[in-house]
Structure formats: structure tokens, C-alpha cells
Length: 228
Ligand code: DX5
Ligand code: ZN
Image 1 (cartoon, rainbow, N blue to C red):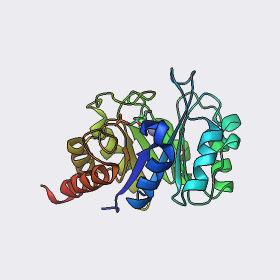
Image 2 (tube, protein in one colour; image 1 turned 90 degrees about the vertical axis):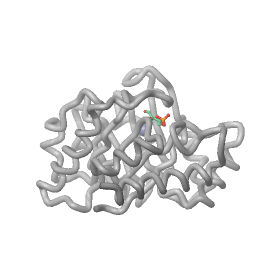
Image 3 (cartoon, rainbow, N blue to C red; image 1 turned 45 degrees about the vertical axis):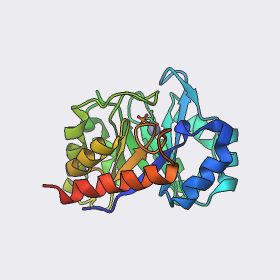
Image 4 (cartoon, rainbow, N blue to C red; image 1 turned 135 degrees about the horizontal axis):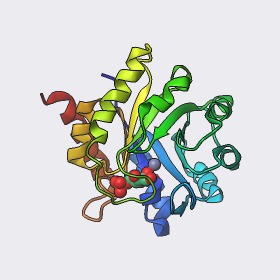
């Protein structure tokens, strides 16, 4: 089983405390900062602005995990400071130039993931699967934090893992994004996920600190490895 990683959803931080929240994530040794970019067209929401995201880079050395939910990813991507070791996820839906997105991400030294909405078939990835570094399985319809898991996406996690393995791509990842709560993270691990986006369902909750949330999530993921 591939080693797990946690990617903190930066749209879920308290923006009045941005610097201190990033410092807490640094101390918790989070694996990635998940950067949701939305254009108000691909999804009916707007965030995170490139100036703010690029400014975040001065506060951490942890890699960024960009998730572009935009209609024109190839024009939007160059606004962001994409670096060696980052992840770039681009949706397969409505993207006529996916291979061009891939070339851009690779040229920046980033890993390239293809993202799929809950209602999208994995068969659409087939033409690029040999070139990608992972699949992002959206476990809610993208756009907003705080939604409920779309249950049939669990089996899609396994199908994504099987698709990668069938092409000999054992090192590639299956990332899950949306309602990754502690019990869901445990389940998603069993179904074959290895990168977990931590949002309002886990790490960013009023009842406990970011450090405690990260710890609880890591424990839940581990639980998914040991349970039957
Ligand atoms: C949606 C986002 C979210 C979110 C995750 O496009 O990527 O899924 O940050 O947070 P929760 O845990 O609220 O679903
Ligand atoms: Zn996301």
C-alpha cells in the first residue's frame, strides 16, 4: 500500500489568521497545502486568488497541491507560482487541451493529476493515463466546503487505483477531496486512497487545534490500513 499523505485545504483556513494558521500547518508537518482555484464558471464559487496564494509561498517550504476548477486552466495556471515538487490537478471535464496542461505542469517540475467529478467516468482519462502522476477523485461535487460524501465515489477510488496499477503505475497516487472526515478517511484508505484533502470535515474545526486535527486524521487513515 502506498504511503499516505495529508493535504490541507487552504480554502478552509481562518483568513483573519492566515499567517498563524500556516505556521501551525508547518509545525504539524502537513504534506501539502491544497490550493483550490475556482473561476465562478466551472464551479459557482470564486477563490483562491493568485496574489494571495503566491504570497503564501513566503510562509512555508511545504509543496503546494493545486486543484484548478476553472474553464480555462491553461490561461489560469501561469498566474500561479508553480514549483518543482508541487502537484497540479486539472479536471478532465470540458478540458479540450488536457495534454497541454500536462506539458505545462511537467515543465514546471510538478506532478500532474487528472481530477474527476463524481459523475464523470474514469474512461475519459484513458488517453493520458500513461503520462500522469495521479488521479484526484472528487468525493463531493466541487465548489464548496462542508458537503456530504457522494457515496458511490468510494468504489471509484478503487477503480482509479486499479486503472493505475493495470498500467504498471504503482507509484502514482489516488487523491480524495471532499468530506474527508475521520470515519470517511478510514474508509477511503480501505478503498485505496493515499492523499487525503483535509478541510472543514477534519482539520479545520472549532473544537480542536489544527495540530490535533492533523493527528486525528493521520490516526484515522492508519486505522484504515489495519482494520479488516
Ligand atoms: C471543494 C474543496 C473541498 C474542501 C474540502 O472543491 O476542495 O472539497 O476544501 O473540505 P470539506 O472537508 O469541507 O469537504
Ligand atoms: Zn480541492
